[in-house]
Amino acid sequence: MRDTGADRADTRETPWDDAWLAILRAARSGVLAEGRPWSVAELAARLGAAPGAVRGALFRLEYQGFARRVDDDVVVLTQAGPERWAAGTRALVGMLEYAVRSAVPVLTADDVDRYRTLVDEADRALRLRSDGARSALLATLGFWVGVCPDVLLARFTRRMLELVTFALVPGTAWRTWDADAWLASSLLAATTGDRDTAHDAGHALARFRDVRVADVEAQAGLADGTLVRPPDLRPAVPSVVPSSAAGTAWDALLGAVRSGALEAGQRYTVDDVVRITGQRDADADLAVRQLEVMGLARFLPGNRTDFSPRTPSLDEWAENAAAVVAFAELGLRILVGHDDHTQVAEARAIVDQVRRHATVRDPRLTSALVDLAGWIADHVPDPFVRDALHYTHSRAFLLLDEPPPFRQWGVTDVAAHLDRAFDGDERAAANAAHALARHVDAHVADVRDRYGTMGT
Image 1: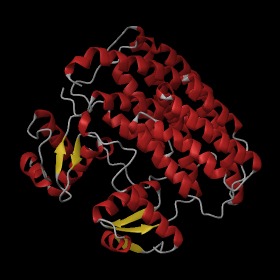
Image 2 (image 1 turned 60 degrees about the vertical axis):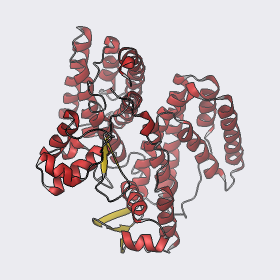
Image 3 (image 1 turned 60 degrees about the horizontal axis):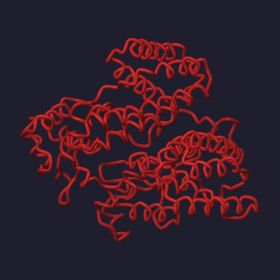
Image 4 (image 1 turned 90 degrees about the vertical axis):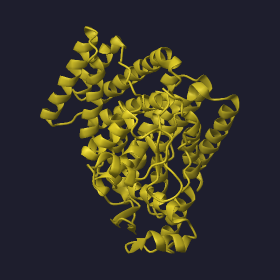
């Protein structure tokens, strides 16, 4: 398998970050009116930005709930609202737990010193109840996004941090002052490099989040519990992944890439896809977008249809595997206590398959674990968790030409935790994911050992 790590962009920053922030600031200040249609051309002219950067920025704004698309190149700028903010905070704390977990083993002494300074500043601001308390606390969260070595997880976490930072109207007061548990446990994780302490820090942040959200709920005059466990929300923008929009055009395009009819590193257009696959223009265009979202192609400078197939690296596969576990834990904890007995019975049946296949060392264990992640993705009510898990779940078997089998037969401990989780035990849901994370770490090490000579 060819190594294409060199062409891999660090997804912490994108070419349209400046345009994203410019549109958001202009909407907040009233320079760009909310509630009226804006075309890409108008926005580009108003902001002095390139149309391509504006399109990329609008896709992110739409995903976060700051814009609503009314036509291909026309949007209405909106407020995200407290419900979407609350869903974003829930997704953020779960993602941050695994950002901390992935970062603590690789922090440098300078990183730890820098984080200690941020913790001291946040602690001081919170104790003094100063106007800078919110910014100081958010800076501790932003630190972990910046040092997270898993760029896929960092990208999703950063999008949620952006949403949480900007979603509430400016008049919402900050009145939540006790973040001691988060600050202390996250600093301990940084100084010790201990992954279990990283999980403790994530759970401390989740408790802080519940207090903060309850206060915002009271300020907004909403009924108790409306925001702490927000209702199922429609996604701000439909997830463009093959699992939710698959069709013959996607199959034909993926087949052409896998067979070599479309070669990695070569330049193609949607017209080429139409010619090679025989699909309609609109279907081929969507399929190309899906291919790029999956990390199997990248768009090239020029017009909007130029792209190049690419072969993902083993590192990208490893990051995807870790992200699946992170998002699955968050989804499980949200789903604990679900009162739909039919759905819980479906989940228990999958858990029974995991246990049975692991006990007898049946290769179908891999499929059973993937099915479990798919079940969570299909049922979790948080749109951001659902989107992230659908995305990583869909990529699980696409990033390597020969997906490696999962041979960690000790995952019966995960099944035991899941049994209790589906009885309504949220702690058991977390324990199941933490145990699975350790097995996935071993799986990644096993795959690197077996496949590392393949040029990945």
